[in-house]
Image 1 (cartoon, helix red, strand yellow):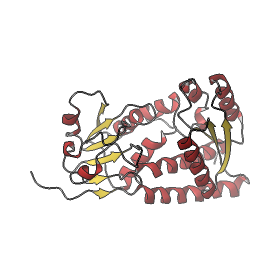
Image 2 (cartoon, one colour; image 1 turned 45 degrees about the horizontal axis):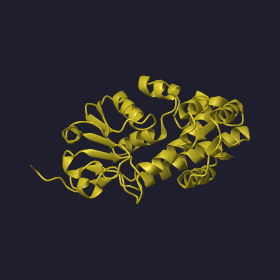
Image 3 (cartoon, one colour; image 1 turned 180 degrees about the vertical axis):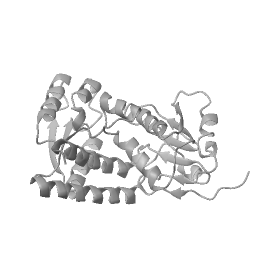
Image 4 (cartoon, one colour; image 1 turned 120 degrees about the vertical axis):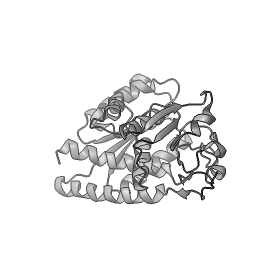
Length: 285
């Protein structure tokens, strides 16, 4: 079998920087024309350290992009009904353009009910059933941010999914499933797998485009990857470890996202871009 050069890294940090710069210019134009900057409301339930850090990061990026940030912290004991009421109120607030519910929210809360309390036109994180339907049917709407970031990375590196065999390992409602739908919409032939898939190695070996989103460190072995494949590692595990065994995968893939610095920065960049999209639509600009 011919050898494949070590993979080129897909620089999500650089692409995210350019995306945020473009978003900031659009936000500035909205502010100039209306006198008010776009506004993203973030809702955090409890004090999970990772979630607190992530929300703080998002708010800082908002400020750099010229987007107003409204933050609501709710106690860990918040009920589903209380959270739904909060999100409904933000949905009805004309000064709020986008809403982000930081997840997970705690096992006692019906997360789906909470997501569905977000008005579709303000669902800039792409978590509602309306947004999933829009992604599946190619209708106007908001993409789940991580899958949306993945598609922008593929475009930036001139990877055309059309006719390619795409394998998505992971089936979460806001990552694996929508990633597959977006790839299908671009004419890829998509196979969904997960941690219980029988014969996973053989399926992975057929992938021209591999999206790892299973939430298990180094779950995908490099030796199973098709030589020349494009590998998107959407996993993030303790110790800055992805779902792909990077050291072995980099010797077989043609393109690969590092962890960190690959998919992660694009998630926030898409969130900000879609917040400005929402503001433009709501203001008729």
